[in-house]
Length: 286
Image (cartoon, rainbow, N blue to C red; front, side):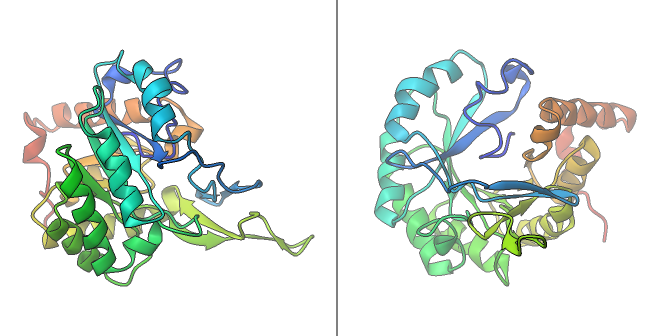
């Protein structure tokens, strides 16, 4: 799967890869109305990672359905729409609008973005708020419901359990870790938003640990992500118990990264004589 916020609406990557090869496309976060996002500079490279404070810039759910979805319908790939709101009501409204729309195969509820003033992480750091927004979305859609969790909490299993109790069909984790960088010449933050979300290989050990913890705490499937650059990285998450993986920041370095991960997993299974990937998932020995 591609990770939301790193793959646009799919059309940006179509010239470089066969989208049909992907397990699913998770499009960038969609809100009820269009959002302009945060002012630049809002992306910068860090050692082994990237800081971003894009601020969920998007076209809004109506334009997405009218102008972006027709292109995605031409491919034989599941389309998961990452949804965002500034209130429980907005989350539910976006989910309700998407329910039953041809070409939408599921929703991923973003309660974990650290780069917006209202919404996002506000819901993802509190179990009660997580349960409330998940329940509200569950009540208005029959689509598969994935909840994307933030690592910016003390105990991610409490949030995971709240999302499961609210009706989530699956969980995806992790989103970015909140960070910042300073220009020592100007003595100003490098990002206009001051802080941003750190992604890339630097966060992979944290993501892997949290996936392992959540897999042991919940009964719904877990989708792992966070710094996956290669097939070997993805295999770590699968062995730890993730049922699927998302590739994000790697696509900024190599737009074919997700396809490379798929091919590498296939080669690993052949090399080790594993006929069914389910025999590998959760096979971690401790």
